Image (cartoon, rainbow, N blue to C red; front, side, top):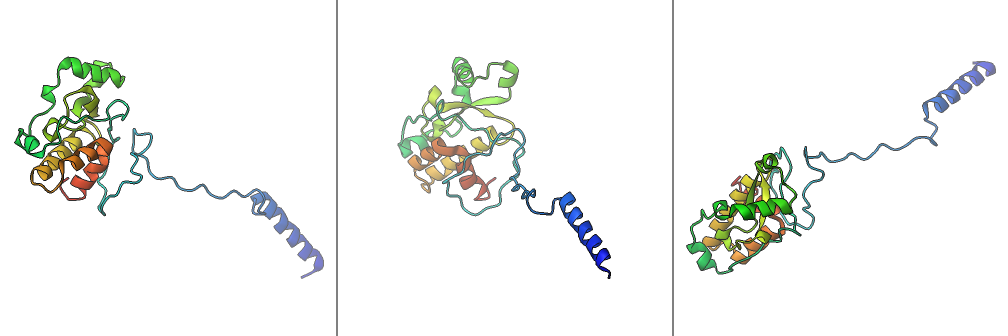
Length: 194
């Protein structure tokens, strides 16, 4: 190979390196991959510091409906397990007066009747688990996504465990007030009751 041909080849390689950006200075590392997002939800539920057993996560096709702690911290009427287990387990939302339901919707900024029809006012701690019948214990649970139906399922599983004395009532109440979604994962999904 002649010196002139080698110089030409070296010059061509240098130009190729500069044009394609392989020279190092302008190269940016690829962005870290982002976890998938649930459609219609800005961010996933906060499960930091939540101790969950090993299980397969169910497919969530919508947001997770959760109360705002400032508006719905939960409220307890009784911590007496015998009194709770003597109550019928179907005490539900029909006991919430319409005026109270409207007030809860207003607090959450849901004033349109058409939008309200996509929710059910629910007790954070149900009456049949010792919850109080007051607005601080009520929130609009969405029908779509993970919400009203899953929360209702959790309420009945917790009542069953409390009344069979496999879970203390105060623990069930605390778990509902702290994070009902994490409790649903722990007591329903992880145990195969979903």
